[in-house]
Image (cartoon, rainbow, N blue to C red):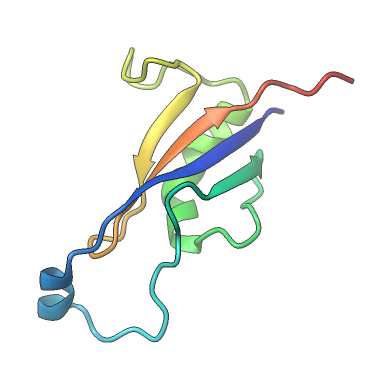
Length: 104
């Protein structure tokens, strides 16, 4: 099974939607652009957002098992995916990339 690199590419925040629809939160998303996580197959990386993992994990698992070319040519790199978490107030875009297996 291959490891998958998860890079935080963009973060967004929609204060107008937060003000209108969201109840106050004690702790909101703390992902930062450029942050990198390494997923070991099905295992959620340490300190990775639970909600984001729910959105990304099927793609991480597929890439870790050699899956590629999602949606017939969507990505320039067939062994990658650009996905976002499901937070409509603070969406985060992640780049998932299959890592080459380390030489044994």
